[in-house]
Length: 508
Ligand code: GLU
Image (cartoon, rainbow, N blue to C red):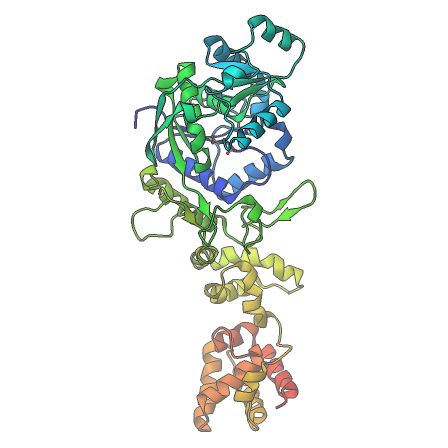
């Protein structure tokens, strides 16, 4: 790498919610920037007004914020290279489009949509594909064919036009991609792409190159779907005479569906049983799509799982903080081939973060649900409970199912467990256990367990038989945390009540 200051940009178009692949692109840009002490820019590429979706910009910013991806320069943060929203830079692009025409690197084209359709049909009939390029541009409606006066007259008459890039004839364009290495393309295979339109808007290609240049971008890190545009982009840098400061390029591998069959697309939405967006999205027309945040993923788990989609540290390590990712990240370790998304592995990541988080932190996330259920809260107690059950859960939304018996007496008893564990004499034994628990003075797990164990021993009873029946009374089933821990937490009065209730209700 040169000693140029690293400046990278994430350049989404606000056409809807940000796909998780887009978040991964933002993340890799961010990690690369921070690793090299550089800047991370957020540029909104909204030149295609037809595809603009209200709310998308806010969604993009909120997604980055949730992930802990901090923007150094952007539409909200400002910065000396602004404005960072392309629709506010229209005048700039016009000037550069004119410059290319003047230098002979671009031309006006007046072919209408109907003309283009006709060209395409004609080519199809000959089993060819129509490409607007050196082979045919000499016979179409453009300023390479028309006289200067004709062109002027058309423009003055307000006839719609586009400005197309004029690819040189039969030249090999050599490009370097930091992930894919050398790429070569012959210009004769390329389309003279549209750069600018008479509505005063540039296309993505022109705006993107002009902005990357003016914003002093050192590295362009983006999805593989942009690789086919690279020959045009490199040619534009040459045409403008900006070759020496041209950014380096890195095209990231696609995210694939869990089956490995095709790319994970926005349209997959919730169809595959998992979200493809970071946050819940509600479209202006009312359509909704689920998001990782609302599904209960921790932001750090989500970032961690994204980091490993197409990158690996070269070791077995799988759990990383953001700071570790910044330390370890390198484009050399980004893979060329597509990366399959595994939703089960995503859950595994969340589980790993669950076990790493403190019971205190998780309790704060659990409390709203308890409040909604009208549970009288003793925070210390909830922290203890959460500490006991968190290892059994992938998400905070699993907590209630894992811990309901701490908060409420069972309302039903597991039939199968009753059949196995509830004998004819069990009600009598449980009545004894209830009495002896009532007699425990300093009521805690240890003393309660001691009392029950002494009773079992003195009466030569089976340990399992008593414990299982007692668990049935307290929990309603054969599951749950350590029985005496549960008993300590719910307290002496509650245990007694639960035993009485069970004895009265369990019928064989
Ligand atoms: N606006 C493009 C997009 O939506 C940006 C591509 C690039 O990074 O050059 O993905």
